Length: 79
Image 1 (cartoon, rainbow, N blue to C red):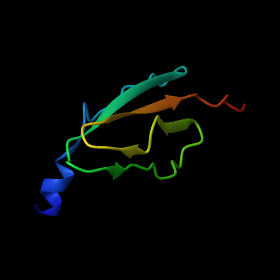
Image 2 (cartoon, one colour; image 1 turned 90 degrees about the vertical axis):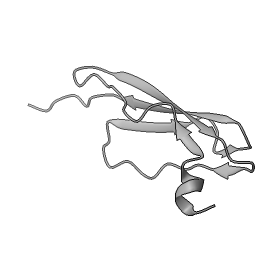
Image 3 (cartoon, rainbow, N blue to C red; image 1 turned 45 degrees about the vertical axis):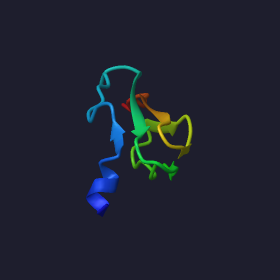
């Protein structure tokens, strides 16, 4: 299989997260590994201090799922 075929076997349950810009909020994405072997997941550093992204597991065996949680906590505004 080609690279695109392999990538299509690692699938999120959605491609958009919804966060409330006015207050603390969070959303999740479930990632499924449909490949016959294991894959490793990682999160690149997020540039925004008020966003945090966490994976509940970073190694997925065949047919396993991981949950990506994205949390937003707005910084107090400086006056």
